[in-house]
Length: 86
Figure 1 (cartoon, rainbow, N blue to C red):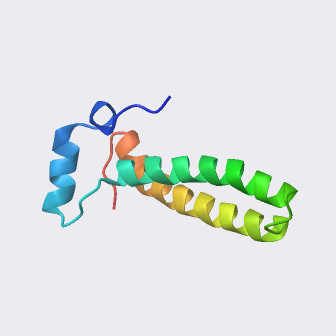
Figure 2: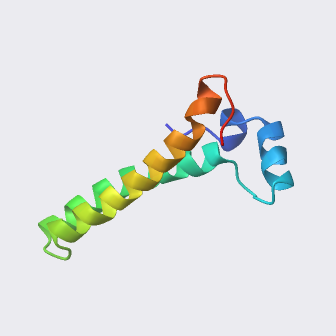
């Protein structure tokens, strides 16, 4: 079950993101990347079975999205621990 964004993030986080010139917070972007990874895993598995996509290409694309998620996790880690992000 996916919760609506207004239940996941406070309005103040979105307001702060807009003040920095971004429409979305890093937490929102990370959540989106994580949803995309799950979606790709489901879709790519079916495409590999149909031989529409190669397993190597699909693995690389998923690994790339996981690297993006890891970057956001590392960026957000200080915030989650009560510090400040760079």
